[in-house]
Length: 243
Image (cartoon, rainbow, N blue to C red):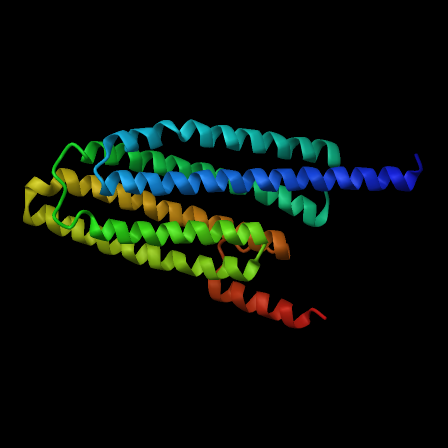
C-alpha cells in the first residue's frame, strides 16, 4: 500500500471514530432529555412508580458517560488530534460531564416526585413548575440541536434563554416562601417544590455550559465567564473579517 493510501485510510478511520463519538453523545443527550420529560411527568401526574423508575435509570446515564469518556481517551492516545478535532474531543468530554449532571438532577426530581405523590396535590397541580419545566425542556432540546449541527449562532441564542429560567426560578422561590409564611402546613411540600425548581435551574445552567462548548468547537474561543453581549460582538466581528 502506498503512503498516500495509508494516510487516506487512517484519515477515514479517524473521521469514523469522531463521528461515532458524536453519535454516542447525541444518543446520551436524547436519553437525558427523555429522563427530564419523565421526571416532570411523574411530578405533575403524582406517579411515584415513574419517579422511582427515573431515579433507577440514572445508572444508564453514568454508563454512557464512562463509555464516551473511554472512547475520547483512546482517540487522544492513538490519533493525536490537533486543531478543530482536538477542540471537539475536549468539548465532548466536558459536554458528557454536563449531561451526566443533568441526569443527576433528573434523578433528584424523580425521587422528590415519588415522595410528593404520597400527599395531596395542590389545586394548581404545580402550574408554575410545569411552565418552568417546559422552558427547561426546550432549552435542553435546543442545546442538543445546536450541538448536533455545530451551530454557534443557535448556541448563543440558546444561552440567552437561561436568563428566563433564572427569572422563573427566582419567582417560584419567592412564591414558595410566601406560602410557607402564610400556612405552616405547606412547608413540607413547598420545600420539596423548591428543591425541584432548584434542580431545573441547574439543568438550565448545564445546558448553557454545553452551548458554550459548541461555540468553542466552532470558533476556538473559550467564552466561559464572558458576558453574552461581549460574545455576540466578538462573533459578529469574526463573521465580518471572514472572506
